[in-house]
Structure formats: C-alpha cells, structure tokens
Length: 169
Ligand SMILES: NC(=O)c1ccc[n+]([C@@H]2O[C@H](COP(=O)([O-])OP(=O)(O)OC[C@H]3O[C@@H](n4cnc5c(N)ncnc54)[C@H](OP(=O)(O)O)[C@@H]3O)[C@@H](O)[C@H]2O)c1
Image (tube, rainbow, N blue to C red; front, side, top):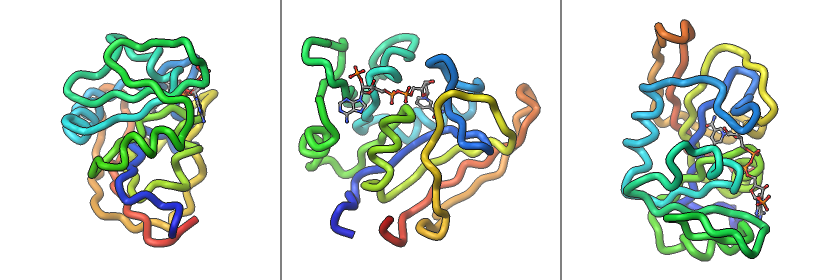
C-alpha cells in the first residue's frame, strides 16, 4: 500500500465502455453532474492535464486551487499552479486532506495507481470516444455511496458511485 496516497481522489464521468472524451471535449452534457462536480470539488485542490485545462470554457475553475500538469517549461495558465511531473504535484499537495484529479485520460492513468478514492458518474450506455478512463478492477474497490438516476434530456440512465480502495493495485 506504500504508493497509495490517502488524499488523492479521481473524479470522472465515464460511459459504459469507459470513454471520457472526444476531440478534446466531453461526450455528454449532464447539468446535474456538473453540479455534483462543483459541490464535491469546491474548496479543494483540483489537478488536471494541460489538454483538459485547455478544454475548459472559462479557464481556471473558481474557488478551487487549480493545478495543471505539462511537460512544457514556458506555459502559463491564468489562475493555476503549474507542475511538470506527477511527483512534483504529489509534493505540492501533500498537506491537503483531499485532492481531486479531474482528468483527462493521461492524467487519470498516471494517478489511478496512487488514488484511494474514485468519484464516478457512470453512464449506462456506450459512447464513441478517443480518450478513456483506465480499466477499474472493482475487486480492489468498495462502494461507499451509490445513487441511480435517469436523465430525460439525454435519455440515458447513470449512477453516481463513490468508491474507496480496499486493496492495492
Ligand atoms: N469525462 C470526464 O470526466 C473528463 C474529465 C476531464 C477531461 N475529459 C476529457 O479528456 C480529454 C483530455 O484528456 P487527454 O488524455 O487527451 O489529456 P490530459 O490528460 O488532459 O492532458 C494531457 C497533457 O498533460 C500533460 N502531462 C501528462 N502527463 C504528464 C506528466 N507525467 N508530466 C508532465 N506533464 C504531463 C501533457 O501536457 P503537454 O503536452 O503540455 O506537455 C499532456 O499532453 C478531453 O476530451 C476532455 O474533454 C473528460
């Protein structure tokens, strides 16, 4: 369990086939999910990849400590702290009680083995995407809360499921 970080959580909206995005955009617009995302992350630190930051319509998200990861030395992102490696981010957030990794695919993949919690919005339908959430072995996680919902605008059902890790990867 030594590589796990008790303060690292991943928060994502995923389709049945684990797609999370296409053409640097989201796959569906789910207002209730955006509200949930805001409620969970406000007041905390959020960590995102450079591409996800650039997909945000209005830049840094308010009332949160925004962290962007890029390999580029000369990029500035208004309202954000910038780090150049996963290790540098972990060092920068070590005093925080809960840190939300908000995507995208590359960033989820690297933080997944370190994370102790997942906050997933799971849409029960396949979507065509070009970016995916990492494969989750559900034997390693226990459900701490679950809510099953329908979205009439999109005409699909989805579940908000929070998980706690019970076994190391
Ligand atoms: N459904 C959801 O919940 C959700 C959430 C967020 C995003 N998304 C979607 O996901 C897609 C974007 O995901 P993505 O995988 O293409 O990109 P991403 O993970 O957002 O960003 C990738 C970038 O992060 C930087 N990076 C990655 N690993 C790094 C490391 N170890 N050290 C330093 N920098 C690192 C690199 O930036 P540089 O190239 O600048 O070096 C890399 O190009 C979009 O479609 C977005 O809409 C979906």
